[in-house]
Image (cartoon, rainbow, N blue to C red):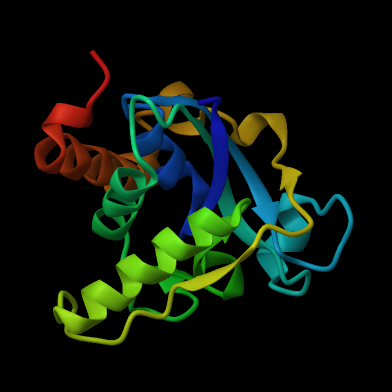
Length: 178
C-alpha cells in the first residue's frame, strides 16, 4: 500500500508537529492551515480567527508501519478533544480539535473511535473534535516548519510542546522513532 495523508488540528501546530515527527511510520509532517475560507492565509490572518482556518499538521504516513488508528490514539492523548476552540492557554477557532480526512475509510475510523471513546466514557466531558473532509489546505510559512526542533529552548516550546513530546514518548514508547 502506498503512503496516505491525514490532517489533524490539535491546538498549536508547533506542538502537534513536535510529536508526530517522532512517530515511527510517519514519513512527513507539515504545519499548515485548513478548512477556512481564505486563499493562502498568513499566520497573522489565521491568528485573528477571521479566516475560519485551523492550525493543523498534515501527516504523510506508511500504513504498513503505522495504522490510522494508532495515529489517532496518539492524537487523543496529546491534546484535549473536549475543549471547544481551546487548547490550554491558546484560545480561538484556529485551535479547535479536528480530524480532516482524505478518504472515506479515514472518516469511518475517526468516527468509530470517537463513538467508542464516548461510549467508554474515556473523557469526563463530551468530545468536540470535528471530523470533516480536508478543505482549503495551505502550508504554513517556512519559519513554522520544524519549529520545536529549531527552537527547543523558546519559552512556549519548553512549557507546552516539550511536555507533549515527553507524554508521547512515555505513553507510546513502542512508536517512537529510533
